[in-house]
Amino acid sequence: MTREELFGAIKKKKSFLCVGLDTDLTKIPKHLLKAEDPVFEFNKQIIDATKDLCVSYKPNTAFYETEGAKGWISLEKTINYINQTCTDVFTIADAKRGDIGNTSKMYAKAFLETLNFDSITAAPYMGEDSITPFIEYKNKWVILLALTSNKGALDFQLNHTAASLPPKFLFEQVLETSKKWGTADNMMYVAGATKAGMFTDIRKIVPEHFLLVPGVGAQGGSLHDTAKYGMNKQCGLLVNSSRGIIYAGAGEDFAEKAREETLKLQQEMEMLLETYLR
Image (tube, rainbow, N blue to C red; front, side, top):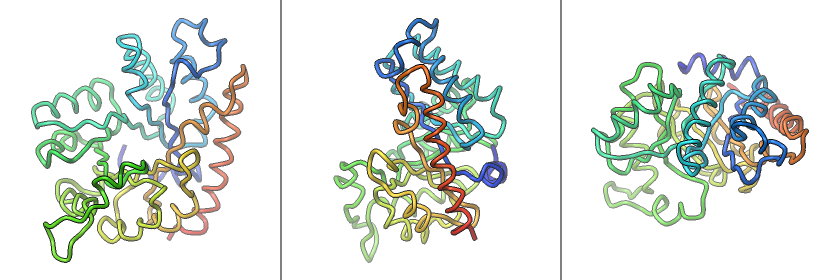
């Protein structure tokens, strides 16, 4: 999916919502455990209930890898179903890969070619050659960790570096350096909603890039502040919600409950787009 196509979906659906398919077999409704593939059946019903209200789906691969081979099959069935039924949805493999170049080449092939995701999250710590393989695929994206929403982000990301004068935060150095590796058409950044007040500084460095924003809802981030400080002229935001949507209900009406929560966010996003899109 190109940036223009993604922005087109945002305008059409009046939404910049990404639904995180972090599907935990121990948390899905009990009646689904009778299905041949409970994880896929859960995902399928969530997708069917929300696909007209969101512009992205983001399976976190850890939730599938923990189930071994059958979990990988569930992931493959999920991405195939999305690709077959949701032509206007941007898909993210939340795998957070990052390794030397020849290994990254295999990760890129696995997720961007074999599984045919639109994008993959990656850690930039090992430098340019670990990221280049992901952006060599046409109309595919790499989403680099920059300023994350977790408490541990303070351990490194907000430390000052000695690589520049005046000193910059490490996450700023990551943005400054990595933006030279790709473009706003094939590279995004993870920026946590719990740090939304710092989005103004992020936008000074990467004004055109999309930001994938976790941390709204359960982690305490503000959707309004995310839009206020992070939105650019093409919206430039994908705001993720996982638990708040997919586990909104625990009964046989779980998909309907998920849709209700998705609709609440979509309606709020519609108002924010009208307010801040410029």
